Length: 166
Image (cartoon, rainbow, N blue to C red; front, side, top):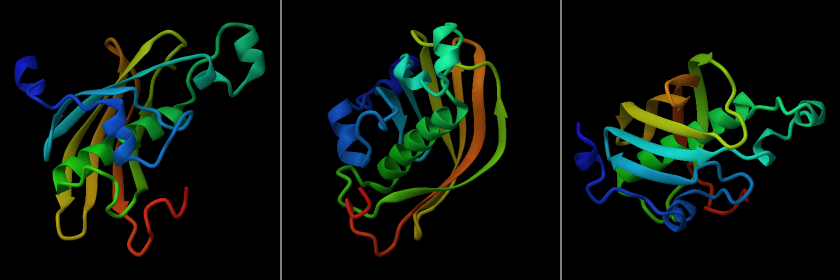
């Protein structure tokens, strides 16, 4: 698929992301979505900052801190939820909240460093439309360098009002 086909009206602005996800700074870990094909795949970015790498003060002082892999996995999970919502036609977040339900086959490479742009990708492996449960193949890279990849499962929370857990 060419970049022109990816970009055909599927760029998702930060304001729209904030309507689809309950997360806010510093927990909203997607800066922009540049491509989304509902039912197939999505691509977005996270600009890595020192704040994202602040889990070890000694590493920051030595200028070797990287973005923790758990935050990278959370960014991939958030991106997958956006894809699930777009696939199911849910765009404003008033529908059921989605929860990260599982992870398989996780692999990790070199950590993303402050100042780098983390490229996030998620592809639908399977979505059960009647239940809204989705399985996604995800990958985070900086250029050609692998940061993390995993298969993730997301599912809607039944009986939980949007904002009830915020």
